[in-house]
Length: 237
Ligand code: ATP
Ligand code: BTN
Image 1 (spheres, rainbow, N blue to C red):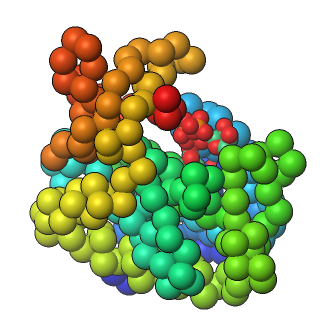
Image 2: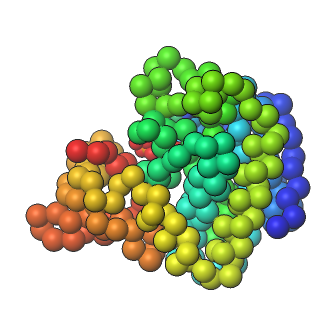
Image 3: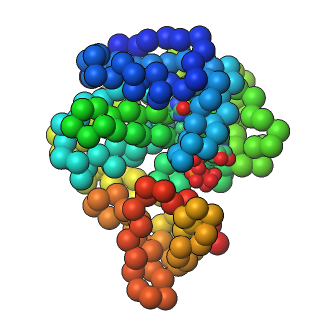
């Protein structure tokens, strides 16, 4: 993939900026901002994005059939996993969209799409940024783990290189290899989980697997349930 990087000093959200330009720019355009004033996670939840982190959105035009598009989030997550491995940082994936180190969130992926037009792969990775006090229990940065700052541009280049690899698998229909990597990295499979929707527990059971569509299979008392990641949150029980 030939990436073309647009660098911004400050933006509300790189995903929002990317959405505005997505129809006019070629696939592979990447929006990177030093800081975001309203970085967001899923369902509009706030994503802390002070200077020092990697806040980026890749504009992709996958032309895959719609059923595959939800798996793009794994392409982003695996690119982060590979990048952190280069620094000796072992990661786990918390289905569907978080990258954890020792149980704490180091990165989150926000994928959004306009079907048949474009997909936006937003990646937020805590690199040299300070973690806000109220998130210190649940979030961590590369700086915290390594005890030193790392070159942000080097991180960006590594993420893009890894994205090229995983996205090339996605584009050539090698979804199985992506899912296999996700399963191997999963912090969730084999664990007891609760699935919440709008704060209410929707179901509880043992996570069995991620199926070929990217959905999580959970064994509950009523049998195996398939959870599509749309609007749900996962909690460990
Ligand atoms: P959770 O399980 O934490 O609710 P989620 O996956 O359901 O996560 P998301 O929308 O994916 O929710 O992530 C947003 C949440 O991530 C925020 O509510 C906040 O708790 C946390 N968060 C915000 N900024 C950061 C950050 N820079 N690093 C790590 N975690 C963050
Ligand atoms: C999550 O865990 O819910 C996903 C967080 C995604 C954050 C990134 S930072 C770059 C891009 N722009 C945003 O506003 N969000 C994503």
